[in-house]
Image 1 (cartoon, rainbow, N blue to C red):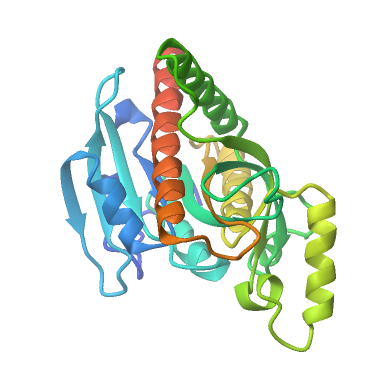
Image 2 (cartoon, helix red, strand yellow; image 1 turned 120 degrees about the vertical axis):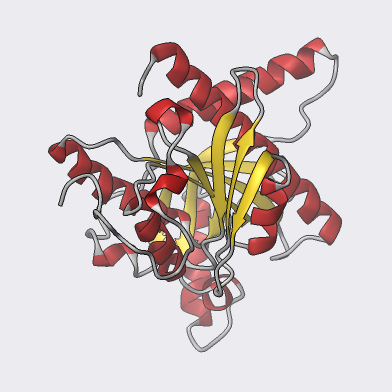
Length: 290
C-alpha cells in the first residue's frame, strides 16, 4: 500500500495531504485533544492560524508555534470521546501522511493520594480496556508510546525543573510518568453504574493496586495504531510514526474536581505538551533525524 493511501479523501475531517507538510520534511506535529474547545484553546497560542471546519466539529487548526529553535509547524484536531471516535480520526490523519500524533487529554487519578487533581501524567503504557484496539491486535500485546516521545518529555521536565531552580521557585505543576487505563465506558467502569457494579469496582481496585496512575479513554487506541502503522511503514521504507500523550488529571477521590482545578490541570497539560514538542523538535534538528 506504500507510505499512505494515495489520493485518500477523509470523511470526518476537512483536510488534505499538503496540510500536514512542514518542519523540514518531518511533517507537522498533530495534537489530539478530545474536545473542540481544547483544540481551539491550543491553537490560540500559535501564530498564522488557519481553521478548516467540518460539520462534525472535528475542526482542523493549522499554525506555527514559536520556540527557541525557530517556528514549529503544528496542527490540532479533536478526536471526540472514546476509542472508536479516536480510531476514525487517527486513521484518517495517518492516511493523509501524518506521522507525529500526540494526545493531549484529561483523566481521573487512580492514585489520588500520590497523583492529585491538578497534576499531569505522561503515559508510558496503557491498559487496553476497550474493544477498538482488539480489532487490530491481541489484547496481550502492550499499547506503548514512542520512546522518542518519552525521552523528549523527560527532557522537558528536566528543563522546567532547571528553570524553576534558577528562579528560586517550585515546579509550576507535578508531572508523573507511568501506566494509565483506557476504558470504553466512563459510567460503568468509573462511576459504577449498572448491574455489573461489583465487577467493575473490583476491576478498578485491581488496577489501582497494580499501580495504574490514571484512567481515560483514548491513549490505548492511539498507541496501538502507532504500532500497527509504524511497523508497516518500517517494512515498506516509509517514515516512522511517533505517538505520545500528556494527560491533565481533573479528578481524584471524586470523578471530577472543581472547575478551577480542572482549568489548572488542563493549562498545565497544554504547557507541558507544547514544551515536550519543542524539546522533541530541537533534538531532531540537532541530530538531523528527518
